Length: 435
Image 1: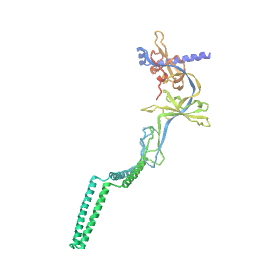
Image 2 (image 1 turned 135 degrees about the horizontal axis):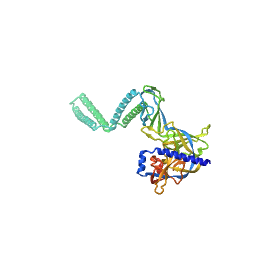
Image 3 (image 1 turned 180 degrees about the horizontal axis):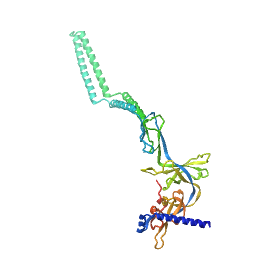
Image 4 (image 1 turned 30 degrees about the horizontal axis):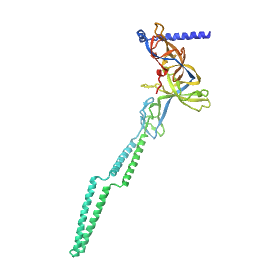
């Protein structure tokens, strides 16, 4: 008797659901029906052994959070961000006053340029013009030397004949000695010019350049520390300073969260944790977003339980959807994760794209085969969703493995609408997995 009443209630529920859906038929849909059967793509309902699942409540958290602080003391000159703003990696979050250190850096850079030019001058050696100039000076000194040699020889001959006295001979001799010294000096200068600077001088100049480069890098580092930058692409979740405020070293200025992917942190009792493994695909429901189905991957199973509750932390990672309005999934939202909690049993699976959202009850459209002159139609089937696998989502409802469900075109389906099946695809083809 109970089964009969339960079946009757189920039929009544289907009838009421179909009636309410029929009321929502749009003029464009009626026109499509008058124009002929709607083309659809379907997938076969399959039966596979799937582990029993259970729902666990968790909280959405960012995959990455950074509390950005100041590396130096200073006064905030600019704070261009606000809570909720999207920031690119490396963009400025706050800028401290830097007038004094900027002047020091400019002075150090000018000094570095001078040192580099001095090093380049020594490394390049003597110019051809300098070599020729030294060569000419040496030749001139050599000519004077030869003249004084001949002059001294002549004076000595005259001294032998007493044509000159000893004082005059000593004067000519001293002039010859001076000419010798001038020539030796000019020749040494020419040799130095021709050989170029000593290797030790070049190394000394190179060392002075490195010392100055280190000073410039130090000042640049100090200047960089006066600008707090975003460590990655993300959103400002908190402000901790304002323009004109004095901040101390280590004091926070802003917090940034990364939401390209989000994590659901939930806690699994010890009797179920053996069924949960890293890498498993699972379904995630977010009550605040009832019109969306989410699939996640178990990213982490912490092997240390809370000793009071005997539950193990489990982290499930979901790819977020971001558009011009920002991230669809926001940090702090409640989430419900369906995790495996038992042995495998035969279950019915349909592709993710077969699920019709937007109503209080999840549903799929099953194809009613054509009979005689009557074309194929579709019927709505209310379903309860279960675990997610690589082959689809576990469903419970009025379905069998003989049924085909609509995976393309179901967003415009209405109960009893005539359809024509264009192709039958597998679950993997119906809902391709992200790369």
